[in-house]
Amino acid sequence: MVIDKSGQWWRGEDLTDLAEFVRAFRANGYKVDRVLESVCAQCDGRAFRVEADDDEGAARRTCTGCGTASFIADSAEYWDDADHGECACPCGGMEFAVAVGYALRDNGDIRWISVGLRCIADGTLGVYADWKIDYSPALDLPA
Ligand SMILES: [Zn+2]
Ligand SMILES: [Zn+2]
Image 1 (cartoon, protein in one colour):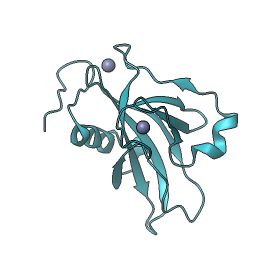
Image 2 (cartoon, protein in one colour):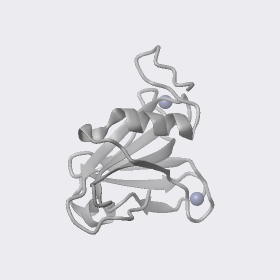
Image 3 (cartoon, protein in one colour):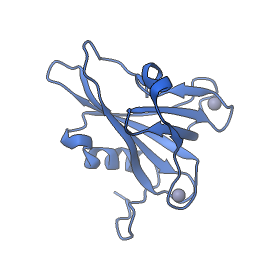
Image 4 (cartoon, helix red, strand yellow):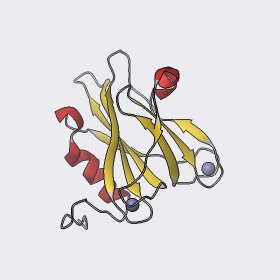
């Protein structure tokens, strides 16, 4: 437990802190059952620039190491309708570690997605987008 709550923003040092923040955030009030870190499929990178639309509920991450872009969860289906902007930390940083929180229904289907970001520059934690999953089956959506 090394989250610094003393300032205006929560700050963390690693994935454990970010996961803890995503669980504590409880997007839409739902208990977060699972948190997965986003990892670049091409180069194993864990730092990303992130575009998101919190109204539509969609997010895409682009690896800062190799430039590979990847949609989070089911965002590809909603991307064309989304009004996405690039996520920026209050400090101005635009490079993040990403952890996706999954709230599940009783039957194991995913009910709610939340996208947690940890600023690489100063460690500030935030949930930048969250959205509902309202179809079934929804068992496996990528982080
Ligand atoms: Zn990469
Ligand atoms: Zn920052």
